[in-house]
Length: 168
Image (cartoon, rainbow, N blue to C red):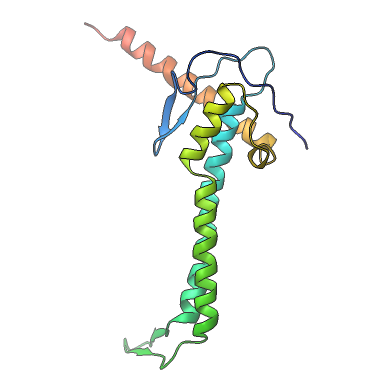
């Protein structure tokens, strides 16, 4: 399923003017839809969020590498702890650990907030989204962006209603 990325918006305001802070310092830039145009900045945020969460998958090879590189201890039913005299395969474990750490650092560096802001500001200025990010945008990211926008719209509406109904 291919999703075409629309042309960059031609607004003169900065990319984060009116942005809404979501969580962990990530923001959802202001977006005023024109006809049926897709929310590309929101989809980028959704993609970066999902990819950052996927970084937790690096814990599995990290645990495997640690168990191969270090001696394993076990506790029997009487509560006695015994430690193996040597590790299963220290060279293999160290290689797995090094590869896991290098992979995690590369992954985290590709999908960090600085890169998102750079791409977002460039997109707002009229430049195209880099191919490595544009290829990663899927329909699910646009759907998540629409969901976030609607949830934020409803939340702002509730807050406005509450402030207008409070006695002064």
